[in-house]
Length: 134
Image 1: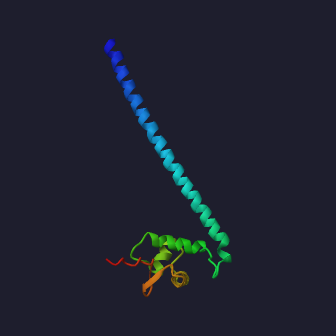
Image 2: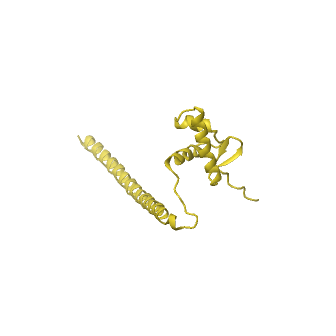
C-alpha cells in the first residue's frame, strides 16, 4: 500500500508541475493576445481617422471600393502577376468578354493610381520594391 501512495504522490507532483507550466504559458499567451488586440485597435483607429480626414486632404484619398480590394487580395497571393481573365476566374465573375474587359478596366485604373503595374501588355502585378544598392 505504501508504494501505491508514493506513486500517487509522484503523479500528483507531475500533474501539479504540468498545471503550473500550462498556467505560465496561458499567462504569456494572454499578454501576447492583449498586445495584439491593442495593436489591432490602434490600426482600426488609424484607418478610421484616415478615412475621416481624407476628404480634406489635397487631392483627396478615397478608399478603394470592395471590388478593387477583392482584386488586390488576389495579387497578394501571387508573385508572377495575373491576366484579367485569371482575375475573373479567381473571383468567379464570369469569363465572357464583357467581364474580362470590365476587369481589365479596373486593373488599368489600379495601374493609373500606382497600385499595380503592367510590366507587359495584359499582365498585371504588384509593384516590386526597388533593389537596395550594395
